[in-house]
Image (cartoon, rainbow, N blue to C red; front, top):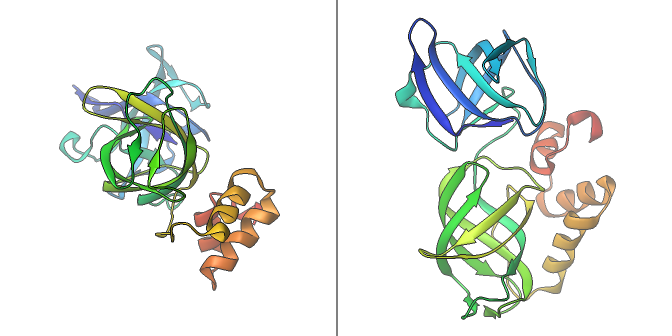
Length: 228
């Protein structure tokens, strides 16, 4: 998974994107997909620290040369992935902490800026347990985004106003449905997703999304099919 932070053209080579490889590996000749647009391509070449490499591993700062994709079709925040692995999302469930030095509480349905990796969006923040979150407090929220982003369970994020960072947290359901507020069963299910074993997470998904195919269960759980 390679979030794109720069897109440019090199004469004689074509379109190049750069970013930090978060997970998985990339190799020269590999078929890839750029989402959320769903653009299919192939890796013509890879570079790290201006040296050509055949394989890139997680944590590497990578420049990837893409075949047959115009720079005008790519944007900061797009993600290079294995074809069919991830789908973009506009609704997330997360655990969030409001920074203690904030002068005001965070209110239900506030519209703020969301950042995770290279992805940016405007988010409506739904508080699931209260009508306002006081400075220093944490709680369960849902984020309704104005544009699709590519994100997986466990990714970290921050929320900002126009002038300041308000707080941050961790995604526990990257392909969420809108949840009912003030429901203990909803909070319990989110806690299972945050802290539970693989079996408990899968059972939680099946209880709320039946029926599901194996591939669909893999997708909503962000788990490889061989672990489902």
